Image (cartoon, rainbow, N blue to C red; front, side):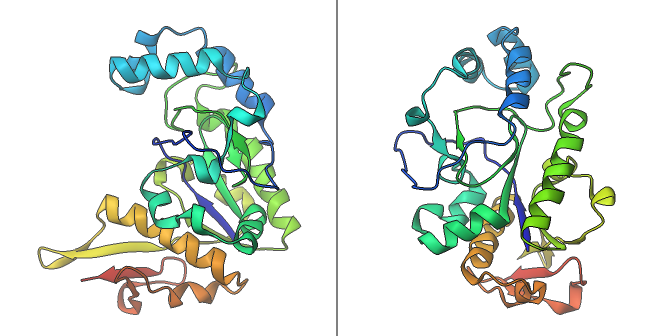
Length: 254
């Protein structure tokens, strides 16, 4: 199986996690193209572009101005650097060596800046959502900029692991960057719902954390059989066949 997850806005570079198998992002040159464009912007431009506070805009302005000048020792593996809701469920710091090796081949993180990241790719601190409205060269937005590169890399990755199934644990914003029709693969999108006010609903924070829990489950079980997904039981979630389909298994809680 080929697993896709989103990145996170929250980062932690305070502690370095030294992996023997750290790698470099495949699309560093394309990332440099994006940074070259963003470096021309002022902090006030970033504040408006990203809808962030003046303080956050200044932080990210400084990051982009310094981007590319950091030694590898100042960078961090993507799976350990991201600290958002998904990664709270994933708990990558506690994965064993075997699970991390499997992740390096089977798990990818979509990124507005780096396009597609392997878990152990060394990254620099950044903030750039895929949906950010910015033109790069002849591309009107990041979706257009990344579409072909991501599609081709996904094909290459899936061929390497002989997989025909994508497990989509990505937010809609990021999954739009994947040319699903052109890939022609089986795509399974797990859904997580909580019982509230008399019905099952998707509650964003809980759903994001559950995607991380599901990712961890798949990395630990390492099965190529998609049916293993329905065996997921964590944090109170169980498979609910009555509201599920083959490509959209639903897990409910409460």
